[in-house]
Structures are given as C-alpha cells and as structure tokens.
Amino acid sequence: MSKNKKIFISVLIIVLLIILLVIFSPKLVKRLTGSVAGAQKEVKNEQVNEVCNKDITSNYFITLSGKIIQDFGEEGMATITIKNDNLVFTKEIEVNSNKFNKFNYVLPRGNYDLTVTKDGYKTFESEISDTKDLEIVLNSNSMSEIIASSRTYYNTYYDYYSDGTLHIKAVGNFASSTISNDDFIYSVLADALYKYLRNNGIYVKSSGDYEPGMGTIESLLAAAASVTVADVEVNGTRGRDTFRKAYAKIESGECTASNINDSNCDDVRSLYENFGVKDFQNGKKTLELIINMPVPTNLIIDENVSYIPNLAGVVEDEVEIGSRVFFVEPAIFMYSRIGTLKINSSIFNSTPYFAAVSKINNLMIGDKVSIIPEGAFVQSQIDNISISNSVVNIKKSAFEDAKFNGFILPNNLETIEESAFKNTGLETISFPESLTSIGDYAFRDNNLSSVTIPTNVNKIGFNSFYNNPIEQVTILGDATRFNDSWTNIGFPESLKPSN
Image 1: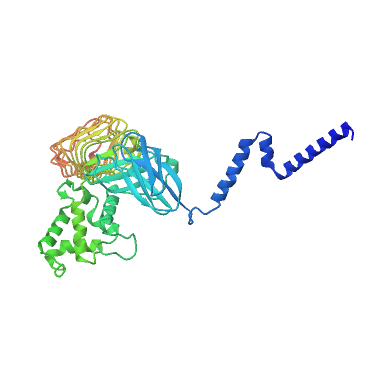
Image 2: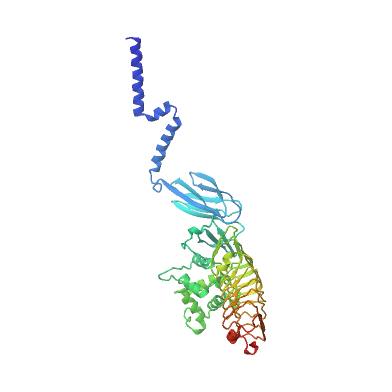
C-alpha cells in the first residue's frame, strides 16, 4: 500500500471517529475542545433538575421561608440557626426597623430548632417540622412584652407593649398610588383591645353567633368607645370608671348571675348585653381585662412614618405632626391626653375632629397650617394655645364646647364658621382687621361683655353672639350696616346704633 493511501485511510478513520463523537457524546466534545466548565455545569444542572423534579413538600423536603424585622434601633446583622441531631446550619442576615428582609431554605424533612439572635434583642425561637412561612419581629430587650401588634394600613405597623409603649413604624416607602382599604385598621387602640382580649381567651367574631364572653367588637366599642382604653379624663368623663364600678359590684357579690336583672345591677347587665355575654364568669373576665389593659402612655412615631393611623386615646407628654406626614385619620387624637401637641403639617387643614374631647396642656399650630378643621378641638380642654398667622379660616365647631384660658386670633384670619367658639367660656375676644365673616352661633353662650367688629366684616350669622352678657358693641366702618339683623345676631336692642 502506498504511503499516500495509508495517510488517506488514517485521516478517514479520524474523521469518522470525530463524527461518531459529535453524534453520541457532546459532553466529551466539550471536554476535547476545552469546554470543561460548560460540561460540568450541564451535568450539575441534570442533577439539580433530578432533585427539583421531586415535590419539595413531599416525604423528602420541607421549605422554611419568612421575613425578619427588628422593632427599634439601627440596622445590623442577625444570626439564623437551624439545627437538629444531624444538621447545624447558620447564616447571617441584615435586619433593620423599616424593612423586612426575606429568607428561604429547603431542608431535608425532619424536626428542627430555629433561633434568630441579635445583640440587644430577645432571641426568637421556634420548632419546625413542616413547611412554614414566618414573620419574625426581633424585640428590643429594653422593651416589655408585646401584647398586640398589626399592620394598620399599607406600610405602617404598630406594636403595643405591656408597659404602655405604643410604637408606630413604617416598613419600606409609602406610595399613595397603591392605597386601598384592604386590611385597614381605623383605630389602633380598638384593634389592640380586640387582640388583647383574644390573646386572653375572650373571642370575638365579626359576624354570626357570639362566642361566650363577648359579642362583636363593634358592640364593645359602642359601649366603651376609644376613651375606655385611654383612661383619660376630659370634662368629667373618665374612661374606665363605668367598667371599674360594674366590676366592683361583681367582685363584692352585690351582682351575681342570679340577681343581675335587679335594678342596682343595671350597669352590669347593660355592659353584658353590649358584649353579648352568655356566661356570667366570662363577662366578669371581660371587664377585668378591660380595666387592667395597659394605658398607652408612651407614643413613639418613627421619623420615616408618613401615614399615621387613628391614635384616639393615647396619653403622651409631647406629640409632633411635622411636614413629612401627609396622611392621617380623622379624629386621630380624639379622647387623648397630651402635654404638648405641635401641628405643622398641611394635612391638619382637612382632618376633622383632630383632637376632639381631649386634654391638651399646650397647643402649638405652625405656619404650614391655614385652616383649623371642623370639630378639631370640640369639647377639649386646652390650657395654652398658640396659632400661626398663616391660619385664615376656622371651620365649623372647631372649638365648640372647649375650655381654655383665653384665645388670641391670628392676624390674617378671614372667616370664622358656624359654632366655632360656641360655649367656650370666652370672656374677651379681639378680631383682626382681616376678618370678613362670622358664622351662625359662632360665639353663642359665652361670657363676652364687649365686642368690636372690624371694618371688613360684611357678614355676621344668626345668633352669633346670643346669650352673652354684652354691655358694649362697637361697629367699625359703617356703624349701622348690621342694624337690620341686629337682634338676630344676638346683640342687645338697647345697644343698636342710631341710623
């Protein structure tokens, strides 16, 4: 055989081998051509696919997932430990107080002990034996036990502690475009009361038959109102006294299951009926829980909170509503007791009954406010008031039935609406030159002896000054412009200017 023929046959054999390899072993080709990593990846993917094709909730695996957050403090690293007799797994995860961080692990089926630790925080512990999704909150060691906790609206949460601390916090950013009424909690303390009772064995159903001990939460709130939780005293109304007195009658034996229909037990029977009580002892337990629920005396609102839920019933030394807040609930501080209340957000303009029926030592309204809203401080007791000259309108019943030690109207005020200062006990009032309108009943039932109406006032409503001991009325400008409605305004006929 010639040399050229031998070479040809050898090349042909090599070509045939390569073709066979290409057809039957692409992984080997990758190795021969240097694609070792690619071949290894393909082999690994086949192994992974083989495992993942098994149902992870089957007899082989369980899934442990969840999210973790801390209640206070700066961000830092927490340690997650998962262990049993055969496995110990640890991992660090970053946590902070305004963002949930997620975790997810697939574990061989078995029983595990899960712990989450961080310096300065109470250890979280749980036993895991099946697929589970957790929401873990690391609580500061400086805080007492949480008795109620929930999401109030979108990204805002509250924690209520046994020492009376009420912590409002935000997780992530507030986006108004995503607002809905899902999972909306109107009153934080009403929700906390609901959860507190349930956590202590008093169950509430939203509809249907009552369980022993109480009826719906709506019935409870109708009987107790938010002030029940606050234990606040305003104008002679004291939050929990009704419940204390009823409980004392039960504790002393004056009212029992056999004589609850007697007239001297009307208050006990009334509360029981409002709670839908079917069992006397469960009713006693309900009253006992209510009168012993912690008073919310330490309000903490994180700086990143933009939405503030209804906090009716809080007791706090100082509360500030700054410009960062752009969404609050009506009657947000109703039935509250506040040392100093600072309001400097335009959201106040459109929040009716802001702190109605409350006790406030110092009220400070800043220059971002232009309107005192309807019923803002109705029936409240306010020792000292400071209002920015930016306020141009005082709405209907803003201070009706309130009590305070004097009042200076802002220099740029234009409108005082219906019943704004009705029955407040005012003895003196000085109107600014900017004022143009005074509504019906605005200053009715006060102690004004002298009234001076500025030149620019062109409207004074019906009975605006009725039932005041007025001895002098001065009308600047055209002194007779209100003569046709003089007595309807409430001015004495004897003080009417001559035409």
